[in-house]
Amino acid sequence: MTTWRALVFLAMTQFLMVLDQSVMNVSISQLVADFDTTVSTIQAVITLYSLVMAALMITGGKVGDIMGRRRALVVGLVIYSSGSALTAVSWSVPSLALGWSILEGVGAALVMPAMAALVAGNYEGKARVTAYGVLGGVAGAGIAVGPILGGWATTELTWRVIFAGEVVVAIATIVGSRWITESPAPEPRPKLDVVGAVLCAAGMSVAVYGVLSSSTWGWLEPLNSPIEPFGFALTPFVIGAGVALLFAFRGWQRHREHRGEDPLVRFSLLRIAPFKAGLSSLLAQNLILMGVFFAIPLYLQIVLGLDALDTGVRMLPTSIVMLVVSFLGGALLKVLSPRSIIRLGLGVLMVAAIVLLATIQPDLQGTTFALAMGLLGGGMGLMASQLGNVVQSSVGPEARSEAGGLQFTAQQLGSSLGVALIGSVVLTGLVGAYLSNIAGDPAVADSTVAAVEVQVSSGSSFVPADQVAAAVAEAGFTGSEATALVDNYADAQLTALKTGMLAVVVIAGLAFGVTGDLPAGRRDELDARASDTGTDIAAA
Image 1 (cartoon, helix red, strand yellow):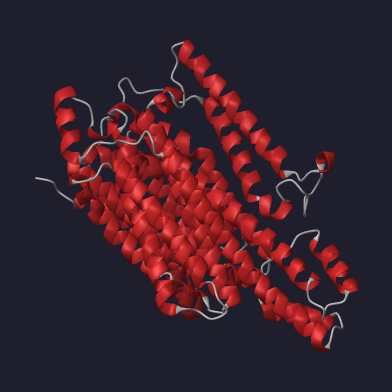
Image 2: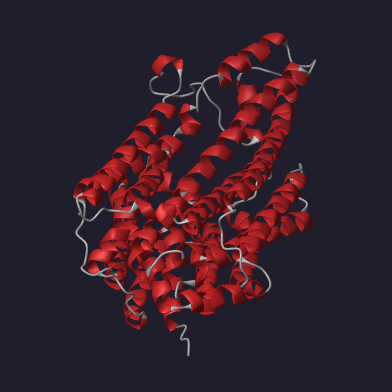
């Protein structure tokens, strides 16, 4: 008989892991005030958290093999809760960075791969599909509920309450870990490849930092780039340096394997077609989700003027539908293959982005917007119901921590790319649409158009139209020209956001190309094949 107590505590762990960043993002203004600092400083703290997780996720998976997956989960939760406690009482930006960015980031890098391996070790067959579906739904719920909790706490109490609450949840999960069965680990226990860990951490952190900095530096044409090598933005050079370090890491891993020594990660795993397809699909899923979750708050908060709490409520249908569909998606395996379900999810995501594109208007179309957010949750839920199981079931028990490290690395890369790519599309679209609008408006003088071109050549921000109106008035513009400058900016905002949604549609369409090697059999066919061959069901 399947017991679900372990899943309850694993789901609590998953919720903790995804709640933080969404809470931080809606609390930036309060953090700036509390620590008497700047927005860019707080954004640097948020970026550091992403870098720490990306740098250490693969190493965290290997540590789980060395010390045991359940012990890695508990140790990670202890580190994570220590970081949450320090964050809750932080008195300065350095203490905030130590608690949130570093301690919580290190803890998450231990917890996430262990959590993925423990689900596979505690559940089999249909129960495993359901378990991974629940975790996927809880992840989506955490991302969507985070702004609501953060907005409420920031408005009514303080953002510190959220992190104090995380300590309580982490302690409860640590206590409940005794109901989680330890999953089989490799024998003999491997040794940690320190050189590989350093190369991996350096490569991942440098590459992700380059991606996250693209909206500030520019991709090729320099914006606020600190230096301009050969006249280009610094971004491609930083990303290239990260990729070079990762190639060096790959070569070192092959060297260790050739000598019969334990590698940090076996790149032979990437030759398992369903595993590689699952990782690619996870990257695409998170790229799409975080891209949408970057653009939609801009529309709701900057264009429409809603506060963080109202924004979270408007986005709640995504969370609810994703949780329900993730939980029920496993039942579709009776009639559809994992590949078909994931492709159906991508199709629903394309429809959701198209509906969102149509709803981006000067006034909120409440019913249609809620429908679009529900469709977004449905598409994400369909994918989440399958992908965790596909990835973990494609490898043997001895490789599940490594698979978990790669799994969450793919998710982190997807999230970073989603924010960077859609952010770049939106900001580039904003500048292009605004310049085009004012150039074609007879109320705006040619000299004004030229001055605006110079002003935006070093970069731009997505700010409320009221802020532009204040800047226009401060610059001395009056009458019809001032009105035209503000109205054209408001129109450019909508055009830019629509361009961002169109980019999401294109990305979702391109993502079909990575699904070809996903398992193609229905549940009964996969089960029959597993009984004949002794292999895991989704490895087909």
